[in-house]
Length: 343
Length: 293
Image (cartoon, rainbow over all chains, first blue to last red; front, top):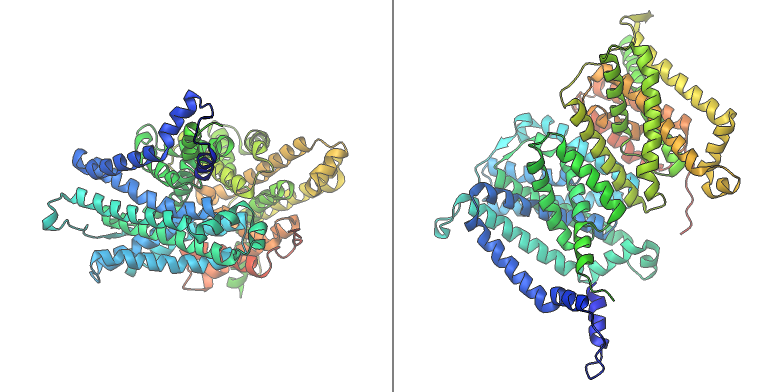
């Protein structure tokens, strides 16, 4: 999208023979041009910082979870949306990050910010380890293997009860706001999650604009062509897997901080599938897709659960199918298409 | 020794159930080259239909054929409405659509019948046949018998009828089959219908053992996928043999490897899937796919 617009701008003659611009196009340019984007980003940043002072604690809690899911979906998007691999077991990495943090905090081994690093490193290593066999498992088989990993994790967590607290799970104290900040606990947790989300989004944004990002996009579009162009398939696909797992693990760590409790029942296969549903509906292959997806993941169940226990599943299931039929780039893609400049 | 044989017999019983769902997976795979991740959920839904019919006062042996018929129609309908529009789309798209179907069918069953567990009537009599100190449950024997009959019927259908010939032609090469005057779309719908029927049978067989709830088949699906992977997705004999091997391996691992016990048994299919995919991706009986880059 961006490149297309920039090309037009560069080649457009500056003098007298200005080409005709339709009112619709002018409006669209106003909405999507660079000044508009910066304004939008600034407004968004202010709103994000102001939000926890405006909402009640419960709403802040929900928004914090949206940020957590956004980080996890950012990772899943890297894998599914950018490198064209699938994972039906991403909830497992999320859970491993959450449990690593919970165990470290429960035993009081390290101060809580360190747990995030441990979760990230652990999940990066595990993702890398899984990424190597994943190279040989294309599409469907990868779906199968990751699905069974997602299913396997729950009994596994219950089995090693001495470490994980078994079926009862672990309850840990949430991080307290430092005195200098003067923030309420829910606000502090919100800002922690916001900081993590901002850093990870910035990292991935830079990553996608680097050599790595271009290589991943080339692989997604056409593996053979990418290989011929000198992209090392094995390296980049494993890399995408490891990064994706790491982001899920980071999200899991923040999740533990926010909830203060982990149990095997929080990380069933439903979580993995919900994450996939979120990124598909939110928008594969775009950064904003992760944010829209996170809003879906958090708010669709909490709003529709009142109607019926099964309602979130029905909505997600239908949405996944409809989105794949009608708008494969999800909500983000739809929005972009609405705002896009018509040539 | 008798104890060991007893375990093997038990393993064969559960293996036969995995085999019947694996057979359904393999049917669809042969026709369309996709693994239907929603197969287990479709089977679970069929099982609920059977439960509803029995609950409404119908005898089990009348409810069974009716359920199979409904499942057949349902499977064909799903192919028509949900799978046909993404035919020929990238693998990732189709996998995601079947995941959507998985979520939807699971929630729909919960919506209609609630998430509370229900007991399902066991069609086979209690008791067992005693042969040299080894107990052959009538239930296990019944399951093995039913799966053998289904295998036989499918074999006859594919090998000796004109319809079966048409279906095999479509499985081999849809384009050529179409040129030869075969209604490819109809055959695909038929394939999905048959798969749904085979799946329904596995759901009905497993429900008396596990209790009926919307998550009945999610575990069974993994075993069935392991069975199909082990035997080779494109070989009907292979998936049945694979199913039996997986069933026995799982039972023996649960009984004799203390570390695994009954909690971690679900790790067995996972290990089987990964090892087979790494060492012999086409499975024991499958044909390797040759790809033109």
